[in-house]
Image: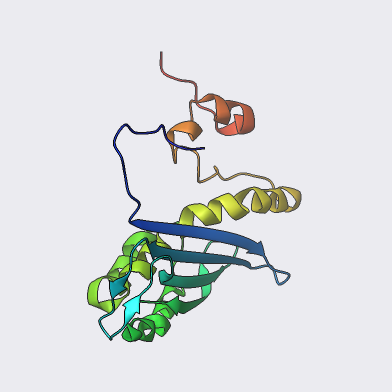
Length: 186
């Protein structure tokens, strides 16, 4: 899929790719492996000397978090494959501060409180922003199936009213979550 073409000639300058893979672990936990890669279409001088060649990653950063069934982070690891300054990678261990945070309860706020500005890496902190929705996409259905076989679903699913598609008075909730469906006010 692509956006419609433009009538104005354009030249590519920068590309950012963000990927997240979600894994079920045999110990009952879940891993999220997030990767951020930035490339430029032109050479540029490096602060520490030399030239960074076009097409080679300027940033290539990896973040792995391990979460439990409540979406609480129980482990975190960061790795820098490429960064514009040698000092960038020295902040990696600080991202262990993610341990104990919950992806569904104030996560982005808590990350900013610990790792914003001079206390973190702009790009690594940005990468954390995709983790809550990636976790939900990756494990919610699987986790709900596991819970459904072991207990009655008495708690309203957290994602109802989390977006316009999953409105409590909408068709998707009516069909898939009839217990939690709310008739629209008419």
